[in-house]
Image 1 (cartoon, one colour):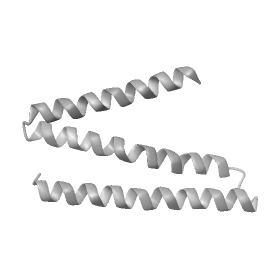
Image 2: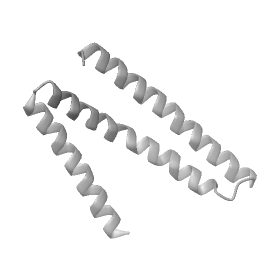
Image 3: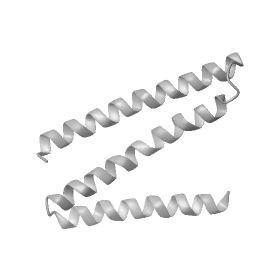
Length: 96
């Protein structure tokens, strides 16, 4: 994948994903405040998860891009970041 198309694709992903997650959060807040949906809190959690997932998805895409481009140092760095994120999630889930 060319660098320019990668940057454009990531920008689209992050921009669209942010707007979508914010829309879900807004819907959850509105539904919860109006008492319309019994699942308002779950909808809020989905929006929060979307916002949290976007940078992780970006790192994963970059790791794949670097591996395909045979830039092993950058691929290893991105993979290490992903492992640290996974370790943090696993440690956080064990604390709950």
